[in-house]
Image (tube, rainbow over all chains, first blue to last red):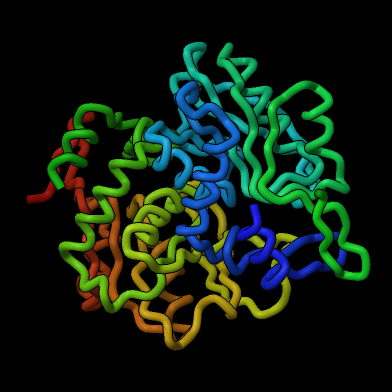
Length: 190
Length: 190
């Protein structure tokens, strides 16, 4: 998506550890009109008529996923990362490794909200090693729901997470795939 | 807001500890069209023309705040709750007590995104004791920005957080104020 790539090049920063900072428009301050256009772009790739649930994970994926769910007229469900007081029984869980927090994290949804009749499009702002998304696909499978695909804002192609899903035959579509950040210069995959 | 109150009465559950569970439409699974109508409702109370930034806190406030920012055509900024790798220097911080996690939590935004020229409407899905919102008002004040008001989805009136802000002369507007949950029956403030 050219508009997204232009924003990444003009506002993105490469930090030590290959961290790509796009907090000015994607995952801290958010340009919600851009999110709506990203939702439209996903709609060109996926057959949205089949989708009846958008699934994401807290926290930074929620803004993009909200605009997707709104644009497509389906509910949004965001997975939570740790047990809090207002989640009762009936959870579907998966364990992932968080590279941000350097520890295992449980991702979960209430089983009432993810059912066998759901056709799920997973949406997230970022994909690197793919652990968070792997956790979400686990939830979909455990619920007996159907995974229609995975839509990603920015994929760090050089970390291999996206290609693992492609090899597994999952329909994953990233609006911008960053192939390298050598010397702080962002290069996209063609 | 009648539609919201009806949803609370038909789908909400009162859990032990006066926790009001509305995860079917507000803060786990999200009805984004309802969020858009809640944004419209805030627009009847606040002078949105003055507002140039919506501020919320991760995670459950993000969906509602996204629809507000989108509806009003202004950027969204969500405060983060703990230092992660992709936040560099230049932070504005406030310490709050989280009753959910029973510990102090630092809330923060990057100073690049909250400036003296910002006219801020704080939006959150829930207000109970008001600690999270107090933290956000601290950030606005420390940034030298102007607080235009606070818009809340559901206020637990019996916990007093909202009334503290009202007494301090802050324009706080909650779409549903729950006055009591005795015997599991939800009663609204008139």
